[in-house]
Image (cartoon, rainbow, N blue to C red):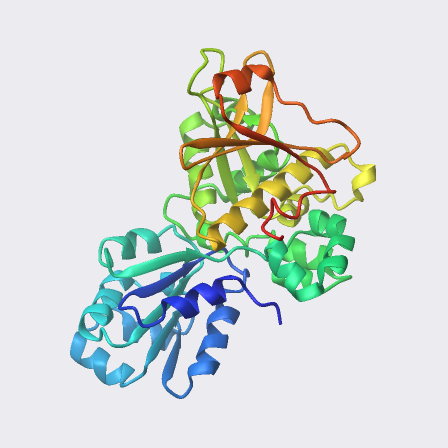
Length: 376
């Protein structure tokens, strides 16, 4: 069993008078995670799977009296795939208000609808967390440090989804299934998605541009749509936890980029599946970009689980000076250059260090990446 970092956080937050909301893409392990807690707290717990029509019916537009009768004296109420229930926010508010002594734990596979559904009704009544594909520190805890390092290239090629990590030799088949419409099933059912074929073409175009600045007008021209449509679809893909964006750091210099952004995938295996390329790293021309994507996504996972909050950027000037990844926290900047080949020296532009005095800089390579991704 892979122990998830979020387990410790959930355990610490139990019975503090707030609902626990766990969001994340499909197949990241949310149901497995809360079932472990369900088994631990039986028979004082109830588990409601909203994929079941009867459960959805019972939770839709229900009053407090029948809700109390149905849930009984359960210490913990687990509601899985809550986005399937219409007006779920109001039901969750009723439970939180009318049964404050009972712990509510809710999962959702996308923030498309559930975020707007629950944010206002549960204002001040919830802790919200995200569950991502397996984090590197979780892999080390499961495999051991030496084995985790030995399969580093495999994880860059095939990614960190639990189903992929746990089924060696079947990675490509399982990734192709994940990267099909199943992964973005919520998106295809969403009211603003009118062109599913466009969504798939956009994902493939984004997959081919990791590590590079992305222009919405250029993507729109490539796909035959306007830039606003591209921007809307990108936002939806981000809400479905498939991709994330980095914006340019632009504070002190006129020649810093301030409009384009970089787009990465939360999982490099999904990215590779979208372009049907699982070749070894020594046979690819995108190895540097893959490594960059892998490390930045791992860094964001690690910071989320450690509750280390920062602003994230990349830095580039119109003269092509660049830094891959910049964090801003506690009033300071921390700049990282990410290199796959450890034998090449890492240098930071004086333009950056002079514009942002006091910034910390560090090169990240396969030799020293562990601390960067949360394992020390």
